[in-house]
Amino acid sequence: MNVARSWLRALAVTVTIASNVLAQVASAVTGNYGPRPQGLGWAIVFVAVALVYVVCAIIAWKAVRSPVPGWLMIGAALLWSAGAWYPLARGIGWLWPPVAGVTDLWAIFVGALVLCYPTGRFSRTDRILLLAGSGAILVRFIGTLLFSSPSGSDCGCVQNVYALLPNDDADFWLGVAWRAVGLTLMITIAVRLAVRWFTSSLPARRVSFVMPLAIVLWCYGTVQDSLSFTLGWDGGWLQFIPPFAIALIPPAFVGGVFYARGLRSRVADLVIVARDKVDRALWESSLARTLHDPSLRVYWWDEQQRAFLTSDGEHVPDDGDRDRRGRSTLAIDSDQGPIALIEHDIALSQDDRLLDAVSSALLLSVDNDRLRGRLERTIQELRESRLRIVEEGYLARRRLERDLHDGSQQQLVSLAISLRIATAKAEAAGNTELAGDLERASAQLADALKELRELARGIHPTVLTDGDLGSALEELGQRSHLPVEVRVDTTDRFANVIEETIYYSVSECLANAAKHAGARNCAVLVTRRDEYVSVVVKDDGAGGARFEPGGGLEGIRDRVEAVNGRAELRSVKGLGTILELTIPVPSPAAHDDGTRVE
Image 1 (tube, rainbow, N blue to C red):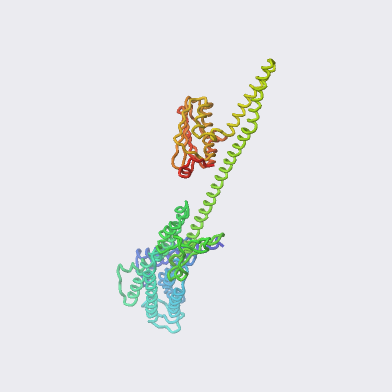
Image 2: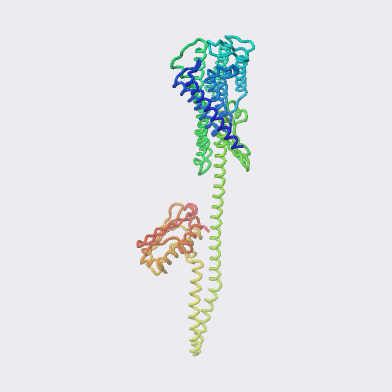
């Protein structure tokens, strides 16, 4: 079907161009121009008018959804050549009458093109005007066939073989009547378009910004042609105005179509404007500015209230106000239900593709916003889940540390006391060998108890429970193999999970500095900044450290991000390493009494 349509259009274009060019060439060769202006310049003008229509028809077929405007342009261009063929056919009795009857039929096609602008569809009034014009041209065609029989001296015509009641003046009066009817229809169309122009809104004027000028020039051309035909008036250089006006109509049509297409491309930019979030007020103002409709309003569906609301959250005016004259409403829905209503100037309804672009852009933005909200909720749930896991791990380690302290460790301490008592009794009894064995057992028990305490401290630092964060970090510095300067510029207590995160992160940093960086000195700085606590660990080691999967620094970052914090690493080879941890904490006002947040 598409191939056949393409071939048909190509054939129509070829025949139209060939008809106009051959007519002008034949007129130049024979010197038979009839009543038309003569000369090479006029031949170029007539062919140029036809070419303008043909080129615009090809563009219209590509740009306009309806094929009607393109075929109207081709029909006008093809019939435009009839005026040049008529003088050449005057020597053929059966040919010249029908050719003479259709010399002005192109005007009907041009009028139809004007009336269907810019959608390619006709209203009821448009159809009435077209029927009136078609009826007038039909009357002229039949009258030319039945009555026209001008003398050979007047037009060089042979006898009309179709004439039933031949009359020498029939052609003149038919021409006068046709021009009177045509001029009346032209003025009617011009007045109709002018009224529509002045009473329409800004969008309607922008869509049809060139066509009124073309219509005014065409009206003038029709008046000039009527005066020239009736009174024999020579308009001189003004004779160029009618063909210019006629040639201006197709570009005006195509220009309006491309203007609307430009609006569609600008509508697509609204997705970029609302890429971060669907700001309702921003969407409404941007859409109104894009469509050049300051009266445009967007009403958003509220699922909770089951009603449409304005961008300010107010209820929509009643339907009587919303469906007022000159306004139209575009409903935008998705699979999940209604989204919005767009109240706009009715002139924008003439372009279905423009409204489709508006609907698609808004749907895409809303879908993006929904997906973004769903992603943000998922990320928040993931963060909360990670935090719960960390907190649960903290509580489990604390319970294990307490079990070791209150259970196994206390039993070992009691055993150590029993061994010291037994050793004393053995020494008192003079059993030195037994006393020696008991002392060795006590020493081994002391080593085991020390290892158990170290294990418990690794599971959960008791110093955080018994003391504060500053004393815990001081203890880490003292246990380190490197000189460590510790400075804690806050006395606030933080949540247990946050203090434990800081403790183990600093511990890992000091271990890395001693084992891998070859540092000579380290420094730890803890400060409070509003709702954040900052921890900076510096060393003067080899540098070049980076986050690597499975590495200690990666573990620190995972531990910090689990409590919604972030870790920033700055490490240059030969210049040491700086790791800064930033962790959100409740404001000091939340626990000014010094109590800890569990």
